[in-house]
Length: 163
Picture 1 (spheres, one colour):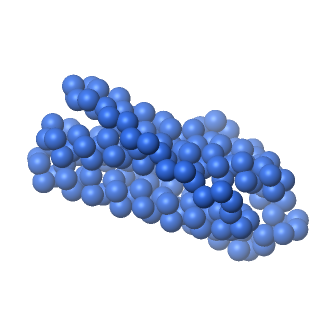
Picture 2: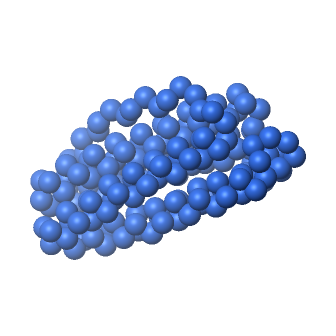
């Protein structure tokens, strides 16, 4: 593998672990705001992001490359309610999507076909992640951030299984 691709994948691993850390911090804030269902949902997001990081981690090892772990950024300490949490999550997912796209373009540039194939899964996953947050934002706009609509969505999010 080209050294630039290895370095970019190592950077992406850190980004995925940082996303996991961000979602765990958001889960804590949501729990503190008495939204246990939304908190549980964000904990699942945390787990999913960790699995994304490990998927890249394992890929480098399978290719005989070295994993170099970077530190994760400290998340913001609090969010201004569910809508703010969702908007910040969507912005973060778009940033991750851009990073994956850049990584894919690097693999194309260096004609690294196995990496291109591996990254296709991430491209598909990012489309799904962005759509999920966009849909939740639309639902929160309809239901409102207070009252019965919020409680209904919180209950629904709490039913998320361990997919």
